[in-house]
Every structure is written in C-alpha cells, then in structure tokens.
Image 1 (cartoon, helix red, strand yellow):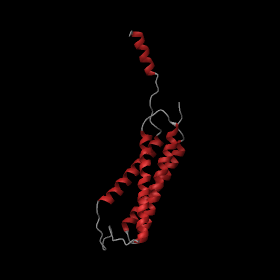
Image 2 (spheres, one colour):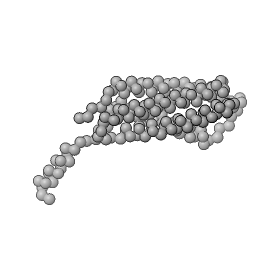
Image 3 (cartoon, one colour):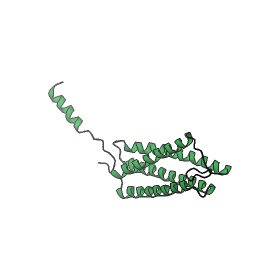
Image 4 (cartoon, one colour):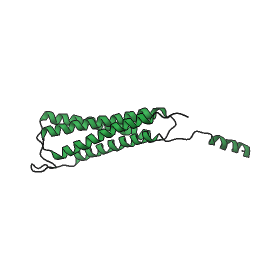
Length: 170
C-alpha cells in the first residue's frame, strides 16, 4: 500500500460520524428512572430476603394485622412493581448508551419516565393498604411522604423533557 492510499483511508475514517451523547434532559430523566428502578428492586428484594420481627410496641415495625385480601393485593402489587422496574431499567440503560439514531431517544425517555410514574403509583397503593391495616404505622407515613415527593419529581421530569424538545439529527 502506497502513502497516497493510506492517506485517503485515513481521511475517509475522519469523515465518519461521531457518536454523540443524548441531550442533558434525556440524560437526567434516564438517570432518574435508573436510580428509582434500581433502588426499588434492591429494597423489595432485601425486604423479601431479610426477616424482620415485629413488635406491638414498636413504631418502626409494628405487627400489622392485614386481611387475606389485603395480603393478596399487596403481593400482586409488589409483583407488578418489579415487572415495571425491569423494562424501565432497560430503557434507561439503552438511552445512556451513545448511538447514531437520536430520534427514538426522546420517546424512549418518556417510556422510562412513564414506568417510573407507574411504579410510584403502585408503591403509593401498597402504602395505602398498609395504612388501612395499621393506621398508626409512622414509618409508612414517612415513606408515603417520600413517595409523593418522588411523584412530583416524575412530573418535573416530564416537564424537563417537554421543554427540552426533541433531539435533531444533523
């Protein structure tokens, strides 16, 4: 191979498109969805694995006397929460990877954020069931407050995506 052919090959390599990261609004929403999904999966898994003893006099872990229907509904909601977390994590990780097609990132960020909002709604439903079974459960009231704050962050995430606009192909 002569020098001119090598120079042409090098110049052709320079003209290829460079991979760009998504917009900051998309990155922010993806990180929010990824952190939420990961923390929910870890917390529900650790709750299922680590046995917690209840005490009637404890404000942290009181003995909850729930009905069979409430227990079945909580179990079904936890399964739905975990099913929401898997595609949410996959969408968030896929969005953080740099690639050339940029049109689908914005809509995929909406999907990840919608999964986060659905997960926070399901968690609020579980909290309401626990509070109906044990009205004096202070820890669940604190968790409910954080869940409402997280839901507000979901709404802010939707606004950030809408105000950031779609990415443009260049």
